Length: 243
Image 1 (tube, rainbow, N blue to C red):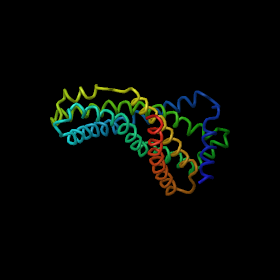
Image 2 (spheres, one colour):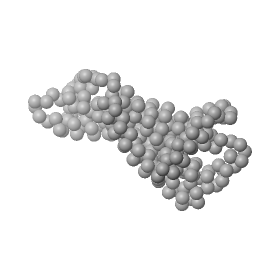
Image 3 (cartoon, rainbow, N blue to C red):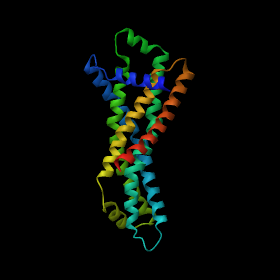
Image 4 (cartoon, one colour):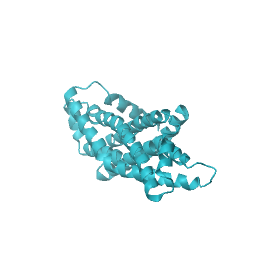
């Protein structure tokens, strides 16, 4: 375990060395941003809408007492979406979509000796392959989380219109009532940390792959599993520190 952690730290150190040619790295960062951000819009939008709708309906069901105003359903759904559902569930989904892609891409380059060819040509392979992915994930995942929050709250409003468990007016009053900007800050900090975890762990698993196609698949699976575990652990730590 200590050996693996040491290799992970050394790989990160190599990844953020000064680039040989900034223009090449910049083009790679832009390409990764498009892949991570635009490529994940659809799945994040669908998940956010349905989670927001389901959360609102379940909260309204739990608040069936006449002593509790139904506006509370909007407040609880808002805070749950901002603090937990949008950043954490989006990160877990992106670990499966983006993380597996990173691990399999770098792992395939390793087993086909493309990384060895880059190193022979004097290119800093970790910097060229890994740092653009980390930067792209740390930049685009917070933007995806912001979109997820907006769509999750919108999904709750749509659920109110369709199911009438809560009137849309009560829901909007609850969403606006006692809003604390700290919750958005916590969500964005989580998103940045989760983006770093997904990109770095999956890239590490792919970079040190050895063997053939079977080992590439195993490295991709390990990357996703370890990323999900570390996301949940980081979620607990950040929540405890900031709240």
